[in-house]
Every structure is written in C-alpha cells, then in structure tokens.
Length: 136
Image 1 (cartoon, rainbow, N blue to C red):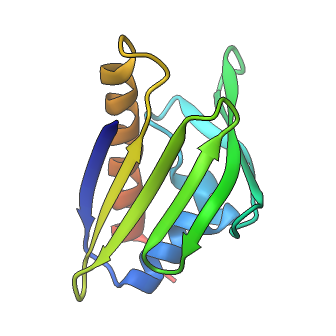
Image 2 (image 1 turned 180 degrees about the vertical axis):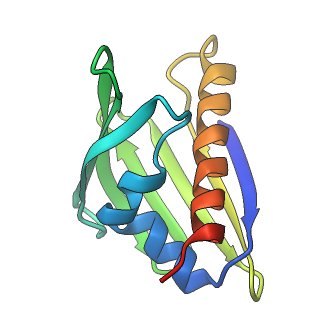
Image 3 (image 1 turned 135 degrees about the vertical axis):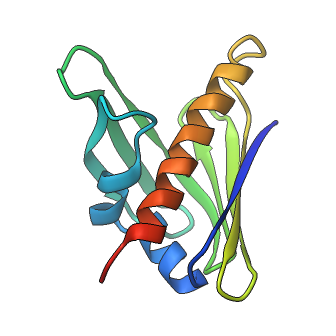
C-alpha cells in the first residue's frame, strides 16, 4: 500500500467540498502545470462511480482515472475500488481549523509504486494550495 498525506489549513467542510465537487476537482487535480482534468464525473455515494479524465494540455497524452465508491463517511472517509480492482481510500482527520488528509492505494506494480507515490503527492500538494488560496 502506498500512503501520502498532507495537512491543509481549512475547516473540514471546505476541504470535503473542494475534494468532492466536480467544478473544484477540475481546478486542482493535476500533478504539474502541463496537465489538466478537462472532464469530471463524480457521484459521491457507495455503489456509484467516478471518472476523472487527466490529460496533457497539448493533447499528446491522457488517461481516465475511474472506479466505484465502496464506502462514504461524510467528512471522514472515502473508500473506492478502481476498474482494475485495486483498492484505495482517502481519510480526512478534522483537527479544528485544519485537516489531515491521507490517501492510501495499491500501486499498479511494485516497480511503479515510487512514481505513483510522487504523482499522488504532487496532486495532494496542488489540492492543499488550491484549498488554502480558495476565495468563496
């Protein structure tokens, strides 16, 4: 299991909303400025699906990140299974005016675990920056 985490200086309700709402996911779900997420489908309930299309802005490369939610505990836990049956979860620990966010997932292969960890760390860092600079 690969695990990445970060602490975000914002209330839990704001962190949860910006993590789960498609209009916000499009704004932070990338690991570097040359990538973007042009399409997001997110039905946040157990048994429902999500699909994030991630692509290079020049259109030369892209992929769909998709799966099925297996368990949702509002403001606390999101568990899901990817289409290739790998399991993952995101935990939200409310610590007053900040949230400890921890994402855990099974890597595609042992060889790619470090690369996937770096990719996920960059996305969560981008999310932290988005949330902490977000103005309503």
